[in-house]
Amino acid sequence: MLELKKNINLLECGTDEAGRGCLAGPVTAAAVLLPDDFHSDLLNDSKKLSEKHRNSLRELIEKEAISYKVTHVFMDEIEKLNILNASITAMQRSILELNPKPEFILVDGNKFKSVSDIPHECIIKGDGKYMNIAAASILAKTYRDEYMKEIANKYPMYQWTKNKGYPTKAHREAILEHGASPYHRKSFKLVPDQYTLDLKFID
Image (cartoon, rainbow, N blue to C red; front, side):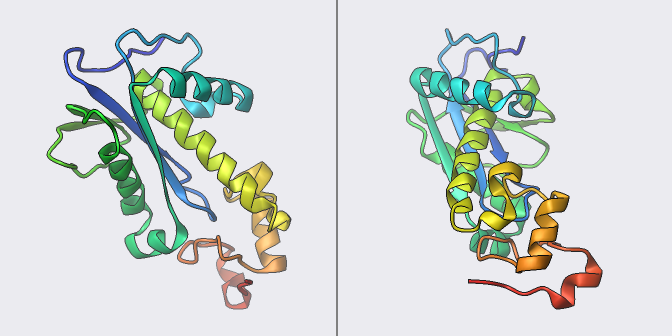
């Protein structure tokens, strides 16, 4: 079972992102402040849970959290910032929207830049160790999946309802056949190098 948080006596938020390794769509981050009496035997790293369980946990987190915020950083900003900085920016923006302001930030992963002078600590695989990070991973994942399903209605050929923008074989083959959409990250290697010169972009 996960620990609630690392600093028992501080108002500590957890933060995590989803979609960093995708070829299309935003990178999405969430920050969550959980109450000290929060409990869930099911809560874990979002990647280890079924879609059904993630959605039920999202309802629980949104109902019981002291505060939470989810932020998308979209393709044009990803191109300007690079994907690492875009991921950090999404987490920072989410944290800054929390009310009350957290006293400490627990970050999933190994990279972060301090925000609003709030002390932080990076925890590798933190979404499998602390509930506040796991809760953030659930919100980031479910909100991003929801967004990808919405834009899939306009571009069904990429199968985003299934792959959510990740670089599956079918996704890359669809890019080769149809070209890249406005939702694709153009600085990413969308197709193998030998096809790069032939890649077209569609509206």
